[in-house]
Image 1 (tube, rainbow, N blue to C red):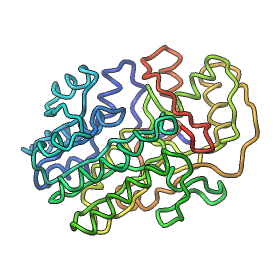
Image 2 (cartoon, helix red, strand yellow):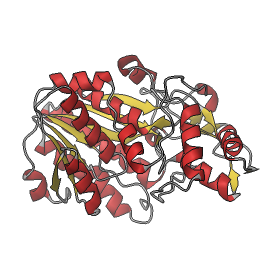
Image 3 (cartoon, rainbow, N blue to C red):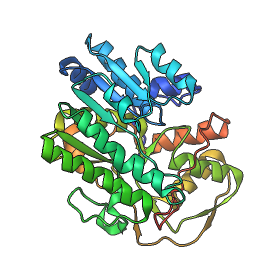
Image 4 (cartoon, rainbow, N blue to C red):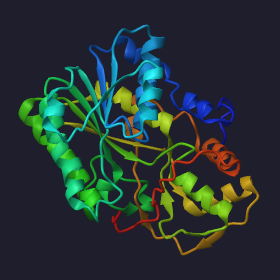
Amino acid sequence: MNRHENTPAAPRSVQELEDLLTVPTPEVVELMGRLSGNLIVLGAGGKMGLTLARMARRAADEANATLRVIAVSRFSDANVRERLEACGVETIPSDLLDERAVAALPDVENVVYMPGFKFGADSHPEQAWAINCYLPSLVARRFAASRIAAFSTGNVYGMTSVAGGGSREDASLRPAGEYSVTALGRERMFTFLSRRENIPVVLLRLNYSCELRYGVLVDMARMVLAGEPIDVTMGYLNAIWQGDACAMSLLALEHTAVPPRVLNIAGPDVLRVRDLCQQLGRLMNRDVHITGTEADDAFLSNAERAFSLFGRPRVPTADLLTWTADWVQRGGESLNKPTHFQVRDGVF
């Protein structure tokens, strides 16, 4: 968890944070300069969609590319739509579960698919199946002439031995709970239609994207600051700066295939929750209260295949911890959406 000497200083405001999150890598700028056709981001109103769409627009502008970047969401928060449009991203408010609304979307050559339903999946399983399994079939059939980078989750692997360093893309899948099962259903629908309609697809199994208003490190920092006990039974995890995850996901558009290629998007290290909390405690000058004993398995992914294609993340864990501790201790804005990283049975 060594600090990288070229890492920027901790952001001090939401504007600074969002500017930092959306800085495109040189590789993303080059991609946008040569990308054929326009780009649509489905589910862009979520925690990660705003970052990804803005990064794509910034990269296209830096490359002097004329492509359109279009964000689609219900946009229940009008502020999200305004922020996207302010930086040049076109927006389309749409209920993607409405087949007529999906049919009315513009033709594009490049699709980033981000919708998903996680929290509440076990109490509202019908909604999880509709969003995670039915919706992918609508989108794949509508954009059968496009290439699609579709977000999934590392939870489809189930838990794996900590000693193994994380699940690789060819590992057996053992999902547990409505969320993980339906997330696998999402992958199966994209795979079925990719094979049947010859649609190039890449499936992105994400495991855990972090920024300073949301994420596993924010959850830990808030608990440390409040003096709350932290259960470390789920003792290990991966974490990746959301800006790095978005950059890799955009670059994945050039790595679609039939049948779909699978790529893990995750941080490079197996991180110990106990160590992360103790480091946050030192940074915030707070005592840390640990309960439980680490199990020998966890939700872990190995992203070396993605690193071989896109390079390693720009922001190391040590800097992400420093930024998070500073942000939380200063009372920085929070999305107030806990990750429930402690869950081991897949019930969300």
